[in-house]
Image (cartoon, rainbow, N blue to C red; front, top):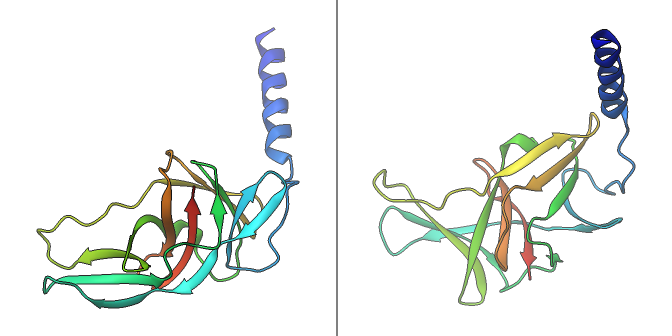
Length: 160
């Protein structure tokens, strides 16, 4: 009896693993898309500019404009990414502050300063080149940006 139950559980798990992703697929590679129902909304892709902060070790990274064109009402959004060169595991999510008509984040090179922490996301490979990125915690309303570690590329969106 136990052997039959084990075989049935293994067969069920194998069938679930083999299921293919059947949702929408992004048009462009290396661009994050917000998944809303059966629709994909491209995030706002840009290169963050940088300037010196008020303190000597601070760098302000900013994106022009007070709000992103990519918007979602979902507090825990899901993203779909068609991968070419971008490494999804190296993407970090940050909340941006709106100041002076732009979205910004301040990072300090001072080892004693407390920098903003990246927001936790789960990355799941759906196929060889298709990835789902799910925000783990609820996001309060505001401006957000994914950025690859060590790069100024950003993929911005707004939770409203």
